[in-house]
Structure formats: structure tokens, C-alpha cells
Length: 441
Image (cartoon, rainbow, N blue to C red; front, side, top):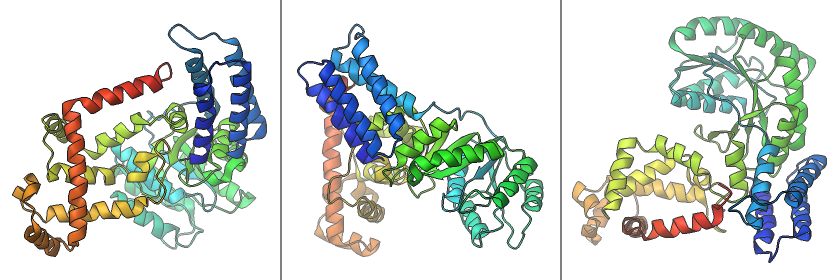
């Protein structure tokens, strides 16, 4: 996410950490480089200048508190100012009864609706979808497909041209079965008078607790105009920014929404329905500055691996035990956490030449191979000689070379588990984290 912007900010901070002494010249250079980096990330020139000036003023006047070096204090100031810059942390603890999604063509409304359905399902709510886009030909088909993927009830009648009639019947049919109703809406290439009137009437009829505007990140600074326009029209309660994983303009979109007064509540970071995150300014800035977003990753890990199984696996690792069954559980967890790309984020840039999609496909095949093994073979992989590998290959449809590659990967993971059980890696990691995060986290 925002790899170029993050790289620029990290480069600026590296100059501070490498400087022999933090003086006014170092601070001036840091502020200027941050300003240029933000502008290259499509952030408004005036806003970028204002942030750079705030960093320069604070770093020049404030004295480091006890326990912090001058370098650590400057880095902390940059972190705090960036957090303020991208907006406030949204309140998503509310449990809405009705949520309306609005936005223009191509913004990703219907897919975002599916992501929201998944998100609120995990919050323990029963969700229903209602399709009110009566203009786009494939809209009703798409929302039905999304509902099927989420395994939720849906009302999306084809041929119906009156969105208000759809709302009335949809609420009557789905309310008894759902705690939360999610409403799709029509879009246009621009917020014209016809769309404005339709959305106004729709919002009045639905009386939603939440109105989320879906905006693609590649809009950049133009997001401000949309956020302000839709806000005046239907009183949006928040923004859902999509395509955060594939554009250099996302910085512009985020800050534009923040300035408009429309809080960013959710971000979409991929195509999968699980690829949704609550927008957390602290976590977001941590990623940009190169600190792994452990909080979000741990939340996903909890969802991917049941608590009892996670506890059991931890105990086995501490005992130095790691079988192919354990390896298979890890492969499944990666898929549930949104894939390798979502797990790595911008904090760990993908090495050149590495195709994450191909790697994920390969891991799925490894899972098929492991499922074709006997219980004893999974527990004792050293039994896997050439004849057994041939048998597994025939049974799983996975080539012998791919099975051997999987065994090598398993062996590497097993060695890592030994380090963990010995405590050596843990001590080394803690030392590195303490060194880098001192006074910041």
C-alpha cells in the first residue's frame, strides 16, 4: 500500500537517524523532503506545506522529554503530525440497522457492499443485502453473486425500475431475518441532477443509520469534491476508499476526504471480500514509516486460526514440534488472512521477481499434496521417500517436483520453529524492535 509514499517518508527519516547531530539544518532538510514526498503522492501542495511547517516548528522548539534522544523525538513528532494529517480514528462500534452505500460508476460500490457484509458478519450481525441500482444492467446479478459469496439473504429483483418499491419490499422480506440491511444504490459518471434527486429520495425513504460514500483511491485530490457533494446531498457519515493497493494517488484521496470533514471509515486493500480494514490513522502511518501493522495482522490471525488451535500450535512450537499438519494449518491461515500481499503490506516490500499470486497458487497445491498423505506421513515427513512421493503425486495431481519443493519449504519452516522454541529468535527480535520503536510505539 502506497509503497512509493512510504519509501519517500522512510528515506527522509533515515537522514535524521544517520545524522551526527540533529540541528536546524537537519530539521529543515527533513521537513522539505517530507513536503516533496507528499506532493509526489498527490497530496495538495498547500496541505503538504502546512504539515512540513508544523513538523519544522515543533522539532525546532520542543525539547525531547526524559528518556528520548533528539533523533527519537523528531521521529515521534513526524509520526504524530502524520497521524493528525490523515484524519481521526473512526467510531465503528455502533451497530447500524440500515446502511446505505453511495458513489459514482466504477467506484466499487457493490464489491464494497460485500466486504461490509463480511465485516459485520464477523461482528456477530445477521446481514441482508438489498439492490437498489435500477439503471446498470448487470447490477442485480452482481449483488446476487456477492450475496452468494457471503452466504447472506438478498433482495435484488430484475426488471424492477422503482428503487423505492424495492426498498419497501426488501425491508419487509429481509427484516425478520437480518439485524443489518445493506442497501446498494445507483451511480453515474458524475453527480448530476437526476442522480442527486434519486439518492435524496432513497435516503429519505430508507432512513439509514449509516451512509457510506465509496471513492476509489485513484481519484486523488478530486475525492474532496465528491465527499463534499455527497455529504451535502445525503449527509454521509463516512467514506470507504477502495483500490488502496494499486495507486500512487491514495495519499491525495485520504487527505482530501479528511479536509472535507468526511471521515474515512474503511479502506479496501484488494479484490477479496476479506480485504477490508477499518481505517486507523495510527496503524496507517506506522505502515508508511515502515513499522509493521501488528494490530491489524493479529486481528486477522485471530479470525484465520481459532483460539484453541492457535494455543495448541504455540505449545507445539515451544516444544520444538512442527509437523506437516501444522504446516498445512499455516497455509490455510494465509488464505483466510487475505493472501500474502495483504499480510506483508508496505512494511515489507515484495522482492523483485517475486510473484505473490503465483506463490499463493503454489501454496494451495501444497495443501492438496499434504491432504493426500497418510496421517503417519504428515506426522513423520522423513518417511517420504521417492515411492511415497510418486504415490502422493498421482493421488493429488501435483507434480513430484512441486511436492519436493513443498517439503523444502516445510523444512525451512520447521527450522524456524526450532529457533522459536529455543528462544534465540525471540530475544533477537525483541532487541531489534526495542531499538527501532523506542519512544515511538
